[in-house]
Amino acid sequence: MNTWIDPGDLLLMRLDSEFYSPEFVAHERAVVCRKQDGDLLIRSLGDLGKLVTGPFGSMLPSSLFRSQGIPLFRVQNVYPFFPVEANLVFLDPSTSSELSSSEMKSGTILISKAGRVGDACIVPCNFPLVNITEHVIGLRPSDEIDPYFLVAALNEQFVNTQLRRFGVGTILQYLGVVASRSVQVPVPPMRVQLAIGNKLRKAEQLRSASNAARRKTAELLAKYLPPLPEVSTGNTSWTNNLDLSSRLDATFYRLSFLELERSLRGRFGSLTSLDRWVAKARNGHDFREFVGDGTPYLRVGDIDPYECDPTAAARVSVRREDLPASERIQVGDVLLTRKGRFGTALVVDTVVEESLISSEVIRLQLRSGCDPYVLAAFLNSPHGQMQMERGASGTTMLGLTREALSAVLVPTFKPDLVASIRKSEIAAIAGWRASRQLLVSANSDVAALISGTLDEQALVVGETTTIEDFTFQSLIRNGVQS
Image 1 (cartoon, helix red, strand yellow):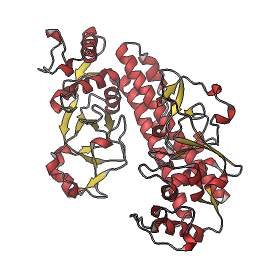
Image 2 (cartoon, helix red, strand yellow):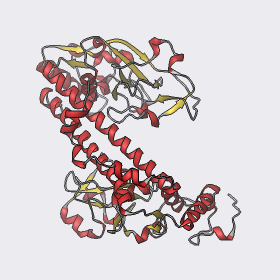
Image 3 (spheres, helix red, strand yellow):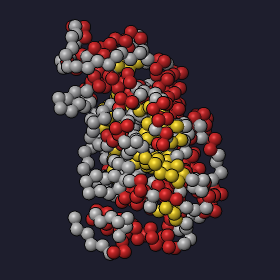
Image 4 (cartoon, one colour):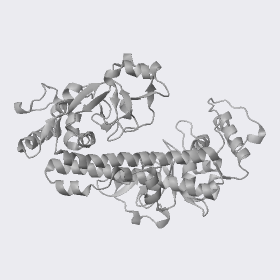
């Protein structure tokens, strides 16, 4: 790659051509111009706090990982605004204290050095103490910057593009601590910082409330359903004629699958196969030409029980009204992924309804008497997932067929349990969506701040809702509509 640059654009003694791509050079000039304008204070990230990194990998072998203790945040846990808590590993408190230089407290900031270079998140309040690996930068902000505002700024294009640029390498994308200190960050008056930062604080509370609602669903199902059998693997299975069906592949008759079916039948007098609850099952459409502005097109990666965001999906030029009514998803349907991360169920509500779905997603139109939220919650539970794993077929890549739905057994849920699960599921979705809206709003505020179009007075006056208003109980009380 050959790049011609002006000597005035040289930065950080970097001479690699990728560092001077037209996008990065143009952005750096915009940063310099904005700083020279003088109406908005812009400072180096290194002046706003102390940046540290985790210990070398040799000091953190996987043999030190535990199932509980001090959370260890790896690069896969660092995601914009808030960390991904799935797949967390832990350290013994004694091990973490030996690595005290990389210990981080709630309210500090984590930045990804590799992978999704430049992604930044806050350490949430529910993590009083964590540690980090060598692939994560820890930032302990000074008192002159609100940490929640700083996270919003780090994830906005003005700052994030700088982080991505400093992570450019000829072989490996990797962001260093020294280069990160040179990143230029907008620093408005503290009242503006707090007004924007408080949106993230509220989003954090809503996220916590959503997670509490999800745990509530899991607890309700765990009390009602029999214990899960120990998972067995292998491709050899012994069975008897009583267990035989039309399936002749050994995986279908794994001991854990058979034990789950027996325990469900033993616990409940009435079980109904999933296909009996489904009036119609139809795959979506195979569209491969995407546009910048069009109809949201939900693919397997977009389907999530709680965090489906049609605004982030790919777009196609086909309009919903272009399809026959029978081929449009409707409120009350359940969407089920059939390939890749197969078996994930999502209820169609008014937000999702305006989308189209890919051919790798099955649309389930339910019969009357079947609550979509309860059915989706069961299908997403370990009991449902194990059954769909059993029903999946394929020699090279497993996937669900519509015929496999007959292998999934669904118990009858009591009316009071149906009402409780439905309420917690809707609360979980509402909490995540409200949190997402606040994050988008904060990002827009930072963009307006940098462009000089932010109405600071209106922003500060408009921030009147207290943080305490965003709890699980408030979602149940105020935000849940069936």
